[in-house]
Length: 279
Image (cartoon, rainbow, N blue to C red):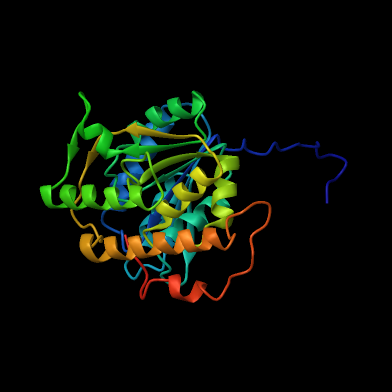
């Protein structure tokens, strides 16, 4: 209780972040620390409030512990935890729901896309885009960019993107790059109706964004394949195509129509993968 000889002190709340960075992590104790240090180092130079939300998706290694140690030194880092592994889409959704930034960036834990590429996406949003997505496909055809990926992964990626465009996401040459920036209101809208928990969450978001007429800017970014990827190109690619077909079926049933989200129908149980899609 304040006393008469104690001055009244008004503590101002810290400013809300202008940027939220959401990083999903599953067994990333080794790859995550250098990524976080690079992100913090870069964002500290920008003189703008930010937050970094790391979503530990039921890791079995020391992912949570290494994040907590870094959070002790950097107040902008926050750890969110899921007791069980749900999949990459579920982890990103969890982070987006907790994020407070005016702009919200989803980035991969391996740092394959350098955080410095953020400025390219921000420029696209400032120019009028509702969301801006990093594109390795565009970068591989543009001068001044570097995309380092094995030929096998590149070939399968090209085949996958061709199928995706035929199935309803026309005009996007790279749907799966783990570097996407959203205006806050757009993120709230898209993630409020997303339900894909695995790798195909990107496909669902872009499908719904196109359905709702949002302006999507695809931006070339530098990208380097990192060792330790958990993606299994053939198997996960097939699962994602199946999930995209499920997204199309849900759309036919009105699941994504405004202004309400219908309750799950009898088709829902068949849409989930047999096991979580890790990353």
